Amino acid sequence: MRKWLSALALLGSLGAAQAADFPTKAVPYASTLPAYSWDGFLAYGSAGFANLNSQQNFGQAIGAQLAIVGVPGFAVGSTQGATPSASTTGFFGGGGVGVQKAYGDFLIGARLDVDSFGQGTSVNTVIGQVNTNSHLFGTGNLRAGFTFDKWYLYGTGGVAWDRVCVQSNASSACNSGVGYMAGAGVEYDIPIPQWGPTAAFFMNVEYRFYKVDGIDAQLNAAVAGPIAGGVAALATASSTTLSNQDSLQAGLVSAGLKF
Image 1 (tube, rainbow, N blue to C red):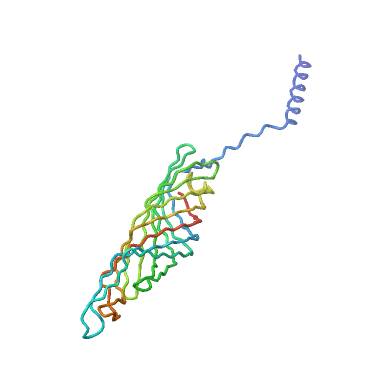
Image 2 (spheres, helix red, strand yellow):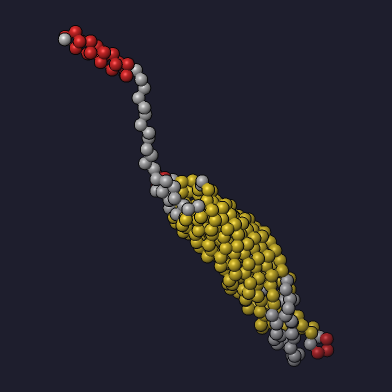
């Protein structure tokens, strides 16, 4: 009996030794980092290059008293129907905030942003030189498109406003108008999982077209006009209405944080 027990003990020890020679199966590592979510709030800055076309539509300039002392009469300098225009290129930039929500691979969001175009235009008119400057463009826009991996392809559009200042040789005025913005872009996100499932640094490249009409301004200007007898005299236009129309095309690069 003792011999049988000794033999069984020997076989058990040999089996244990052979099992120890085989590698054990590794337990799979379970990541504790959350899966990336496209949902979230945005804050970003943007910069780019733009082309601005500015057109002035003039109303009627009615004449005032002659500058020649002792000569009665009035001079009329008419600008009605004149539509001089000018274009310029320059840098364009600003920033904005937004929010977005994903439905599967479809992503939709809303943004508010303000951008500045630092270049002005200048045109020669019958009331002299008219300069436009201080262009501020703002939008409230929607964007929507599809995501794949960390890429987002989208279209965008919404309401745009433009604030512009115009200046003649005798006065200046600033006013704002409302129009539209439309465009498209592509975005790439770099998730920051340590900050949460929606946190990411993002960059996008976007094309935008702005169109704003009817930015009215009231200008005074010195104009020359004829009177009876062919005598030329200097008069001051008392009511020159200018309606500015702006078209701007911009290529923007934006970068920011989503959280």
